[in-house]
Amino acid sequence: MDYSAMIPVGLRNEAIFVVEEQYTAAHIGSGSLRVLATPSMIGMMERVSHALIAQQLPEGYSSVGTLVNVQHLAPTPMNARVRILSQVMEVDGRKVTLHVEAWDDQEKVGEGQHQRVIIEVQRFLQRVTEKQRQIES
Image 1 (cartoon, rainbow, N blue to C red):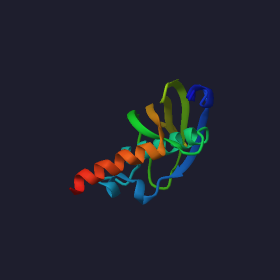
Image 2 (image 1 turned 90 degrees about the horizontal axis):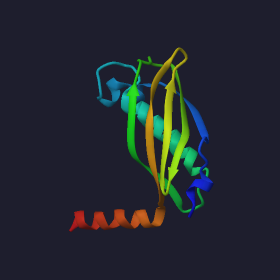
Image 3 (image 1 turned 120 degrees about the vertical axis):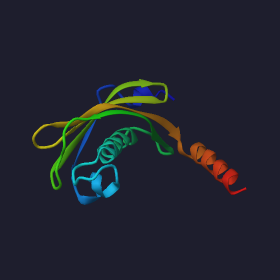
Image 4 (image 1 turned 180 degrees about the horizontal axis):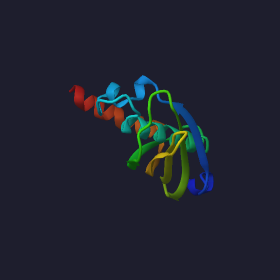
């Protein structure tokens, strides 16, 4: 399957999130302050990137994150809005490389690179089931 024809370079997606308690460093344990946690920002970036690719794939296919290289540049307080941008930079076989950014209402708060690999869902779940069987035996 030619994924580069389905997922053109330059394709973009964005979404807005509000920094609620569940996204703070104090809540998830990655820090002690009630500000946007780095893992939460990365999760938002992955969510937006996954949605971007999912819209382009046929039924039975999805993508999984395989690499995150992101800098968290500035703090974002509780109740602030965060705009996440994801843009396709390269498609190499099943591997999709995206540029991701996070902005609050005042400044860029994060940026970096994210890679996802396109999977055939049934095949992927078969591998998961086999691992589960090994764990249980």
